[in-house]
Image (cartoon, rainbow, N blue to C red; front, side, top):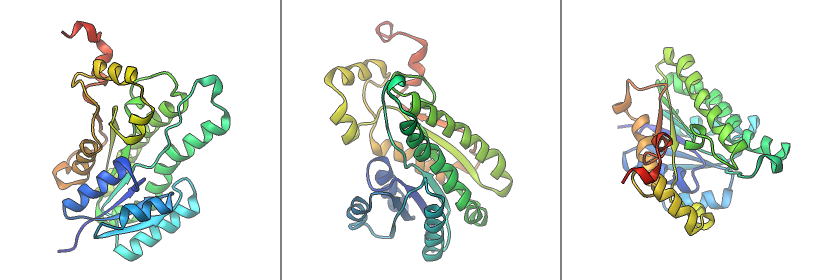
Length: 250
């Protein structure tokens, strides 16, 4: 049987790489997209049924070239996972317009450009789109003036995708991860921050990259064939804690 084809951006590490591996375990082949060529090459080297393509998702010409390469070499696209993005945190007064534009270019322009370019292939396959937002797109937090705004916009972009592309059989959904135990997070989160997150999360722990990948792959699969226009907060209950105080849960 011909393996279905997933295109995953930001696939060289973290959630993108975990999602790639889970797709492979489920019998898919994967086009791995990342701007970091050396890291992408290292990540893809031990994997079978992958096509590694270096490129910048915020560059329209690069996006067009990447989609052409994927569809030419693999034959189509059954699922598009817009995962690439940047996490740039800082106070509003220290967020320069250049920082703002960089965050928007990667986190919002990228999913727009990739989906637009992949739409003909997705029409042909009646495929699925999963955009990766963040819990920061659902609830405000300090230091996330650009990041949180970009992820809230990704959620709305997903709804637009679902409404406009549904008539072609294309489904579009969004996963909003909560705190995830990535190497970067553990490097920058102090013991105090880790303890505070554990107290604020009903499940009392960070999520894992593979747990987020499970949500993504499910939404791309036939098991989610009647699900579109939805935002799935894979967050350990973090969004729900906005209605109560952690100290009152015990």
